[in-house]
Length: 130
Image (tube, rainbow, N blue to C red):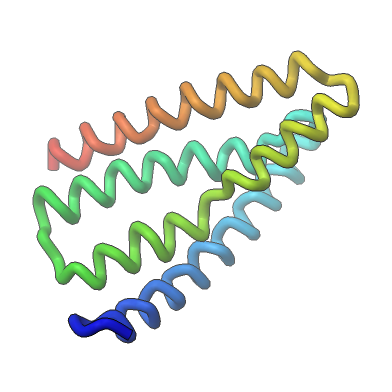
């Protein structure tokens, strides 16, 4: 391990990652059960809310609160990194296409990118406004 607290940072990232993964599991399941459609609403909602949280928290932590770098890293990389899921998005999009739902697959790609960028922007704006 390098100097500068990297072992401690790794532990904090792991703990925050556990919380992010558990949050994703429960929230994604709740959304998917509430709206059981071929479109992957659970993954979409998790990724868009994760984009908002990253924009908001990163802005708040780097421009306003200025906490210890290890806390900032634990939240942004650990929690948000484990909460969001690009691989599941890609897998579900491929499955939609393979199942003949090409319009849903393309809609998932376009909506995920557009809403994700908009959510990061909105989170950043709100983080700066506080």
